[in-house]
Length: 302
Image 1: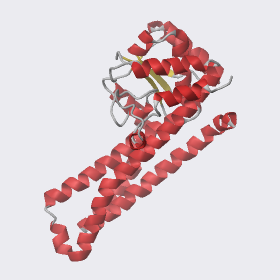
Image 2: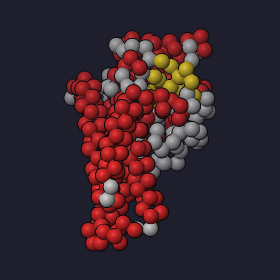
Image 3: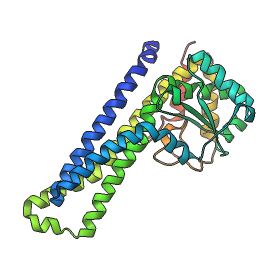
Image 4: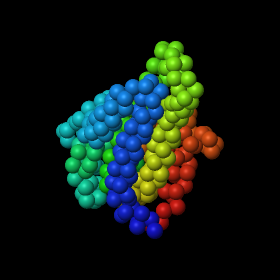
């Protein structure tokens, strides 16, 4: 059952990406329609359509560059770190993947992520802290996990989400600020119907980014379990990945340039002190609790 899931995940994630982008397009147009009714201006709807198309194109072609810039990652060559390059190269061959570009983040907190819209444009980025604190087998486990994200097509959907969810939040923020600055004049001019539309607009502006974020986090948590399993099968040594997880989770300092929008793409949560296991807390976690991931890895029979 596990192997079947691993082999079918690639096609599933491609479908999910197009569904997500289509839903984003429909959602923004829907929100734009409500806002255009509130402000009695069809121009708002036209702007929403144009922005939705623009952000879909931007998120597909340039989201990886945006993520790399936000994280402070820079490209390195084989001569800069031969051991890291050999590890990525050997595991890529084992996984049947093209060698991704390798990036380094100057940060003492051990972590890593993969990004890119497809295998040909994939990137594996690691922090200097990861190289300093992990053993060879642990590093192999982390790299195998990130290569599994590439092979499973996780990197496209997770990177696209960074841009799309961020844009939804910006759109909602603009609506809320613009109404309060206008002093609610449209509501008084349009009477009861205007007031109802405004209430609908407020609800959408508040709940839409929350719903989008919850969807983003749910997708992120599920794919981490799958990438752990894929990585363990790739190295044939689940314990290396398990001990790497423990070391990274126990390191007390957060990744300096990590942001809420990009937290879900990292190997483990880049923020420290967010490992509480309550059901409500779990809803807003970018990653499953480390003990659950370690337990799952140690239950894999290879």
